[in-house]
Image (cartoon, rainbow, N blue to C red; front, top):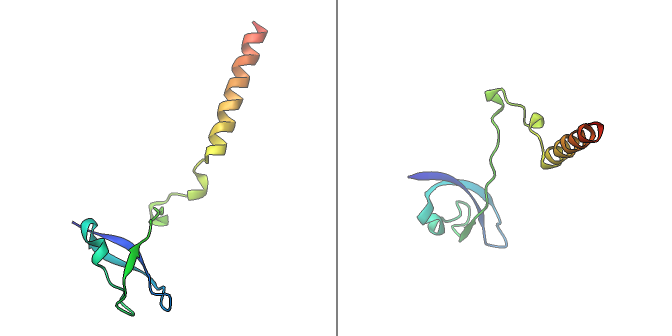
Length: 83
């Protein structure tokens, strides 16, 4: 199965970044489309498609998660001390 990967040319004069459909096993065989030089596969990141109606800004961060846990623990401690 072919997947879309990000690549960067290793030639110092080129350094072009591009996307290429390739099999996972064949990513070392991909050549730069500009200079035909060797490439390396870059680590990709996922993106959220705005057409799905999802707002990336509404997703909580780890800091938000830990703040929520601290608030919950403080609330539990207050309820225990009032008993």
